[in-house]
Length: 172
Image (tube, rainbow, N blue to C red; front, side, top):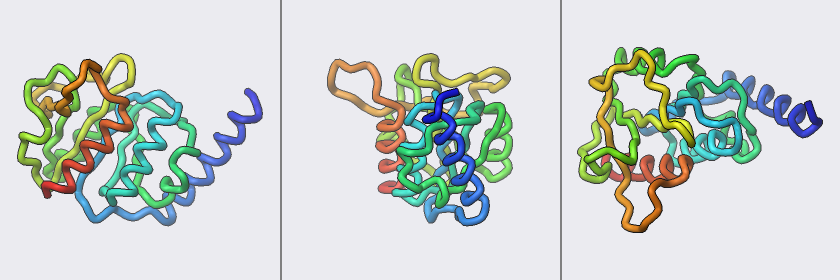
């Protein structure tokens, strides 16, 4: 393991300790679910978005390590929960009466056309293969997508999380 990776691991461990001590739920009830995202920079950027919009919490599914640097310190201010499977995250949200939306570029409904409830959660899947839906029934969420007008087929997951978070906070 190279020195840069060791430094990233130490920094993440310190920030996660501070997270347990200092992080508070945000003022908005939106939960972002990051399902098996790569350990690069997207997770930290999404945590930064969650802090900027003061979202309730972030669920990280199936990823144990990520580079903390792009979060710019937001890790210690945003409630973060790690789950081995998407199903475990969904079970917790169901107990709290959350409506879950899966961001999917093949969905027929556009996010801005949906009236989002106060207790909303958005699932963002892996950057290459999408979400890992093993053991999860489609009835547990609504498929939706962000409207695009150009030829690009999809947005970067951190950009999609930012746009979706903005749509939520402007609606609710």
